[in-house]
Length: 115
Length: 115
Image (cartoon, rainbow over all chains, first blue to last red; front, top):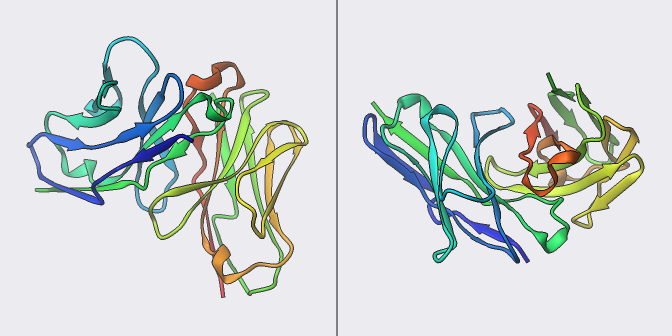
């Protein structure tokens, strides 16, 4: 069965410093990987996705993610964090386990960016 | 452009009362539709998904049911609410044409408190 792990409940970083939010996955066949962000009491917003091709994926708001097949990881990164990046971040995966219709989410990582 | 509407935004209900949460999508046809529940501001649990009118797949045996009476309408219901039904309910859609690779677009959520 497909699954996603986000090993850190919380990540703290100072404004202007680089940030990394970790994600590992397990899926049958080729993985389709996604990152979403959620602000308090709001729905999730799509940030970026990896489908195929270049292992470095660029997305919204200056975020990027690196797909590593050998380590089954898809870490979210940003070169310079902003206070406004503080939010809850979800890694998600789709696979062939269930016909590709289901997106399974990790538990989420709360990012705090300190001014 | 496509939009998703979800209501009510907030709901406080007594134990044993019925529930109806509604979600509609505009600007697209034949979407895949999803209901997720988010407990305690963290991970998302997939409850139901639908790939067409009247086609509902249930992920977790529970006190809830879903229906899709029209192509772009998805309803989450319960006949008798339990305390454990409290949470933040999120409706989402993806394009049918995108297949496995499409990201989800979320509504703003409905916060349900069962007392």
